Amino acid sequence: MAGTGPEPVNLVDLKAQYASIKDELDAAISRVIGKTAFILGEEAAEFEKEFAAYCGAAHAVGCGNGTDALELAYEALGIGPGSEVITVAHTFIATAEAAVRVGARPVFVDVRDDTLLMDASKVEAAITDRTAAIVPVHLYGQCADMDPILEIARRRGIRVIEDAAQAHGAMYKGRRAGSMGDAAAFSFYPGKNLGAYGDAGAVVTNDPALAARMRKARDHGSASKYDHEFVGRNSRLDGIQAAVLRVKLKRLDAWNEARRAAAARYDGLLKDLFDSGRIRRVAAPHHCRHVYHLYVVRVPDRDRVFEELNAAGIRAGMHYPVPLHMQRAFAGLGVPEGSLPVTERAAAEVLSLPLYPELTDAQAHRVARALRAALR
Ligand SMILES: *Cc1c(COP(=O)(O)O)cnc(C)c1O
Image 1 (cartoon, protein in one colour):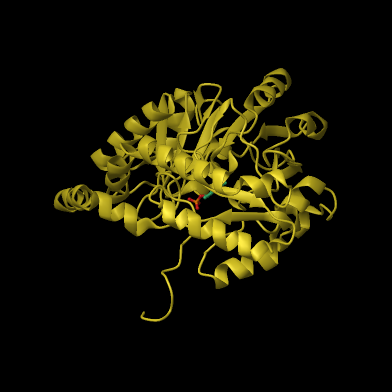
Image 2 (image 1 turned 90 degrees about the vertical axis):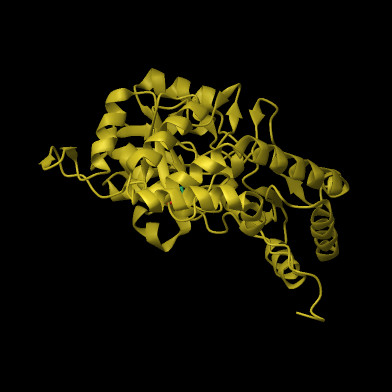
């Protein structure tokens, strides 16, 4: 593409990562094909063990994607018609969509203005006698404020399900994302910190009975071949995805460190813009180990800045520009605009800058320069 300027800086770049592990990955994929072990099988079982251990939990149940992981967890915890699930509207639609799929009603509480994570001080007021679970979302790669959330849940006899789809490897006061609630849902969508080469997901839990229930539920309610104990579904982890995930899991900590380093680079490059208040950073409290699934800044004239960045070849993102209570899909919930002011303001301001483990210094400089130019 002569004469068209430098290559764009993409929000996510999976090619660089593939190049760094190509031989091992290709061999792992060939191994699965050689064994024709395409659905579940040994690779999936090994991955489940390795991923549970990584999270500091007893069990992992692999499934088709992160949305199914949420649904499997909700269902296995008895959340269904008549139940309410307290969660946030500043998240990907799947968090609440999965609740609706099992027949429950999502109830949204606002997020904190500093971290954009669930505001634990708003939870208690949202509890009714129908509340079955609290679902904090570890958005952007850092954990929600779990101690007060777990305390409220324990005291009120409510379950906690972590939506950890963006937080593989994140820590909260020394505990791993996924090890704190009754269950945690992970997505291995390709662009996530731990991504497969297709759709994949898992539920992590310390409860053996819950794990056993979900293992059956993901495979047609099968207790054994030809014996279906209950009506389940088909949401199994496939062998090729499991093999890819096993190769990548070994590198996850190093990749997360590289993400943190890239984020620290942005922090330095943008410091004067943060100090002057021209843009705002999303707070990263010290008791959290943020794994930077996304590096998000808040910009008042976000839509214009987003357009200008993209025109300059900087493929920024927005996570997420429309809060869930303002999505057409959830109009039926009847939650009016204006009822979640912190969420609504954040949705208008958030801008995700390109971030992935292989992002170079030169790319970070280009992004910072382009952002600076767009802000003028
Ligand atoms: C990606 C994601 C999901 C859903 O995962 P899929 O694998 O795409 O179904 C759920 N919640 C959050 C917060 C996510 O980012």
